[in-house]
Length: 135
Image (cartoon, rainbow, N blue to C red):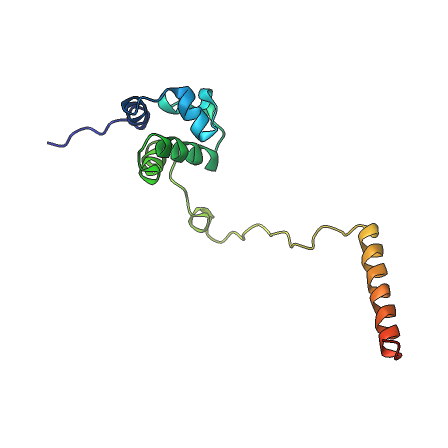
């Protein structure tokens, strides 16, 4: 018979209490607000910033209370994040991918052009002076 897995928030709370740490202690160690730590223990992840921040918070909390941060993040991702879809598979067949903006798609400002032109002119002048024999 397989034992049920303990919820991530409960595991973190139990580890924290077994080390004799308060939420304030963990907050001081991790620099994460007490409100966010309580949200993690209660598994209210919608009260945290999204994406990578949630994973970083879980990792820091787990490390601070002596658990494996990677394992806790893996449990978080499996339980609370929707599976990622591959953009190639998600795209409709026969439909072209949206065009990507090139790094130079933004027009350069005139000021930048002037500055770089001045630098080039100064460099040319210095090279001419050097080649004229005055070293």
